[in-house]
Amino acid sequence: MHELPLTNKILETAIDFAEKNNAVQIQEINLLIGELSDIEEHWLNHYFKYISKDTIAADANLKITRVNIKWLCLNCFFEFRGDKKSDKPPKCPKCQETKNLELINGREFIIESIGII
Ligand SMILES: [Zn+2]
Image (cartoon, rainbow, N blue to C red; front, side, top):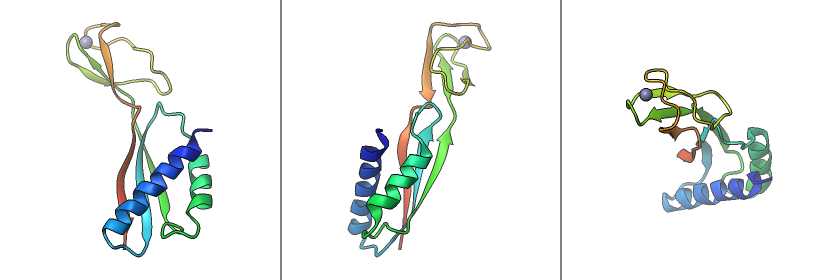
């Protein structure tokens, strides 16, 4: 279970941000998570509810947006979407390259924004 330390980190970051901005409450936390990440949203929400009680983030909504897998072909510089749940290089649909491909989206774990009042 690596969701718990991650959830801790999210909460810490959000509270730190809120305190610096003199907020009284954290309303929502928007997360960007790559499709290749094996983070389970169910556990994130579950842990968040548990560790955020008695903090200013207690009623905050965790909003999760999944980021599509995207590859860049280093041969012809064509960008294309990859299959879900595979980090194995596919074939470039434009030039058929199979080796010089770089994963440019799909592994992110980013706090995009934090809603405070
Ligand atoms: Zn190509």
